[in-house]
Image (cartoon, rainbow, N blue to C red; front, top):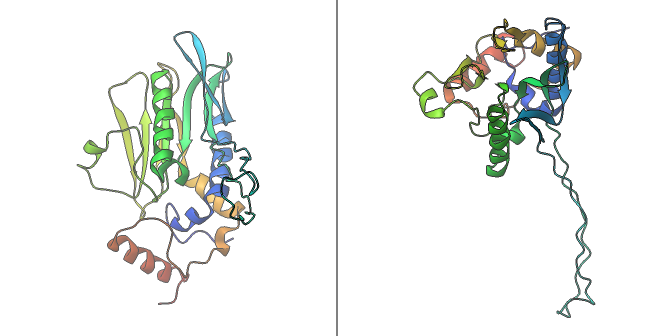
Length: 259
């Protein structure tokens, strides 16, 4: 089957992110379980249970359950105006699954988040994700954040003001180690290069697991048959003029867009 025309992240996959995200979660879980010690296990979770001050607390994803609101009828209204009957549409929730590494007692060692537009777009969404992020860190859990989304605003745990001193990249990975609470490891993922291998911290003194991102994305592309994608339009997301020119030239050289 044809491969993606891009060497690393394919920006056109953002338009299919719910499906891509679900696949990345499953493949990451499987890749990690193939290398973890026997008493650790990677799970797919919607709720992250952590231990803090010897008490258990739940960190829940941004799922909103809506209920029907009872509006007064025209007869009950103080106004005599006749109201048209609305179509009542429910806002669909976005389940934000993640991977967590737990020990045999269920204690969470590491949380791994693949960020999505609904973590980054909109003030409310960002604030909810940042609260969840801080709860994880405050609970003494390692955190790996993988941001392959160019939409929205920056939400990684690493301080943005320091990161701005370095050459920008559209995609970033942040690793926080509870053993080193005063630092963050940030890995750049330029569009023009394959995605990096990411260290996944475990318990104190243990060797890191390694999450190989590019094979995960390549498997998503093949299994999802994304070679059928239409590359004639513009990708979703934010790219500067130089990157947009590179994208166009890359697609032309790969035969996905006429010269």
